[in-house]
Length: 254
Image (cartoon, rainbow, N blue to C red; front, top):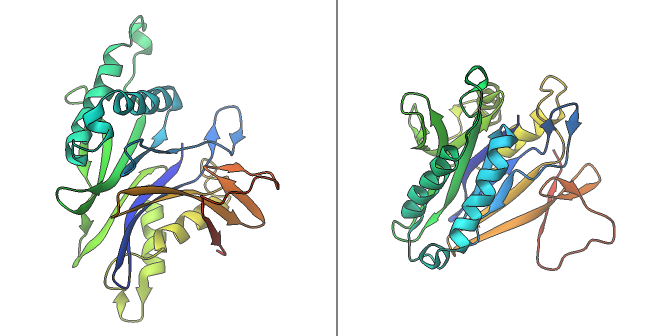
């Protein structure tokens, strides 16, 4: 599977939303160059996945197609909240097109999605987890909520493998002598992701880290991630001659 996170970061008075993921797919072996985050064409949001690519990739491509073909979604007349409803309907319509599956092979979709962006109407960052609910035989959503224990400003969603372990590692990065560091997240989730990518304990999490940032200016910006001497974009290592004047580089030294 994978490990994908979305969180709201605040440094000083500046807020932004970050989506980050590893780049490993597991089948016969480890394939460490898989794109798992797709910026949506309306520029204010992105969708990411964890789980079975047989479900995830066709669904994500059709989500993008549905936005490109519907002008009200593409030009943001439809808010991000309204777009979320459309995306859930598209996902469930896709499920309805599956047929000719032997009864003994029928299974629930093992795919999860993160939808995150900035909603111009509420003027707030939004993060939703889209998941299959067996009780209704449909995909549905739940919003990311703040951490309990007086840390409601820490908004984070995680999908994939080893979620409890990821949360525990994040807590360690947040811990100070006075307790959990107050206020919003900074890059603690990214540090936890990097730790788990490097650890041999988590065989389904690995490869290069990929990341996009979403800003209040309604921009979703991918980043080239430079780590351990490798420059990569959406998980794929870049050739030396691949330079970009429009895509910024994030240097990760952890």
